[in-house]
Image (cartoon, rainbow over all chains, first blue to last red; front, side, top):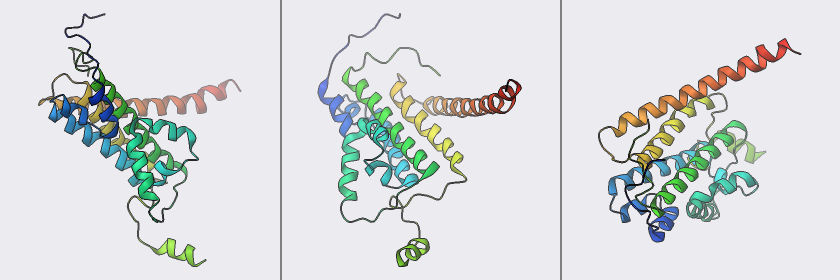
Length: 132
Length: 86
């Protein structure tokens, strides 16, 4: 196991804020470029999922397993549910389209959770080597 | 009935209506693999620099290649290997 060059440092505020707004924890750590890239990637996955499967892939509470997978972006999911209750007539998706849309949103959630954990213990979690 | 006609004739509304990708859904693998690679490398790389794009492209190709290999392996297992025993 490689020796750590920097000590682990638990930083709750950037990590927790990263769950609310993707990439904001990196901004607080002074890594603006990384924060902007993470924000762009997570939001593209989240919005892409809703573009493919419609808003229902996030707001449908009956898909219990997929709803659990949204925990990494729960504030965004919560905001989407508020917007969906503003009288918008949405069309539920079915079949593959629903699965792909849900997969996009779930991947946004997982990757945002990874970024948030990285901000919680920053920067010692990043290894020296870059894996391809 | 009126609702059915209205729904079938209205234009697609982004984020409110799902895309009609029921026969082309597998093309979404490409943007999915790219965005996963993009976000993961943004977190993972020690330094965000000119090599970022290269890392993202390589990982995207790796994901798509692995998915194609899994599809071929599943096809061979289900339609070639298993029928030999049953």
